[in-house]
Image 1 (cartoon, rainbow, N blue to C red):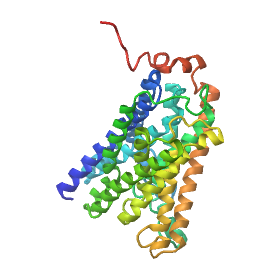
Image 2 (cartoon, rainbow, N blue to C red):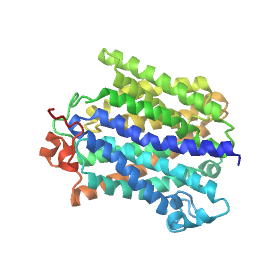
Image 3 (cartoon, rainbow, N blue to C red):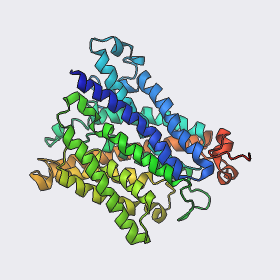
Image 4 (cartoon, rainbow, N blue to C red):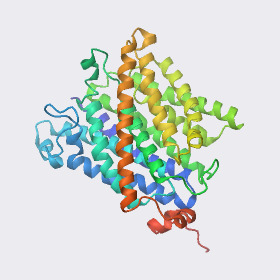
Length: 406
């Protein structure tokens, strides 16, 4: 492989890794000031834990082996010793590291659903077990030769399209977030306007870092393809995200009378989520339409928690689950060559729907049972008095903003 492609693989890996601190800033700005450390620590905790698990056995699980269509053997190359000493070890380890960054951010995304009320230790237990039981196998299903990757061939239909993680990342994380929101219950005083973002610039900084890193997220894997399709991917990543900002702001203006900066940031994230599975398989015009639709629908979907009574603190369900579903299913209509409206038939939509809802159901069920087990044993939720006071001091012994008289 040429050195330019390898250099892009290294750059993309760094970009995607940077997205997890971006999530920390985005989420941290949205919570109250006395919970910002706790919120950001959930992302950094995931970064530390999931990296270690991925190197030890997660990467092995993310590639199916033998007759298994579910996951690889976690002990087949424990600690990646054989991979490191193989003839192609240099490229293989780079690919493994790139895959680790996806695992990290998928887990970190879930944390937004339990903001202001989750114990850090319980979160870390959940993160490690959920990654082992859900993310690592689902990565194998979608990208590692598993049953979703071969679904089209099995059914005699087009293959499932999930270029960068509509199912494996966003639907997966969104479904788990919904499960945890149900297990932990509502925050004290849950209602519209329960809390305002304590630091709007922090939210915008986080969204900007995410948009920046997302070019590695979507176009990163092209280092393996000699950058053959990178132009289409980057223009779609830019265009859909920009269009989603407009879609969100229009709905927000109609619904609430004001277009907000937090709405613009949220719209950008919704567009990034929706274009993730579709970035390499849409013409740019259809990518713009996807962005507008995703931004508008997600702006309305965040109200679901009030309609149905679940407290998804930072709208992981409304943005990542809904946005992931929109982007994944949209391919059934507009994927180049196979979408219903661009020369295809129902085949693409069929396989997209099977993949999306299989991941959704599996992730939700496992996350719900796991979260419930933690809550009933060591406890997942902090004490009411700690929640009211803000959990930074009680959980971490720190304050996000320590102001002293001088």
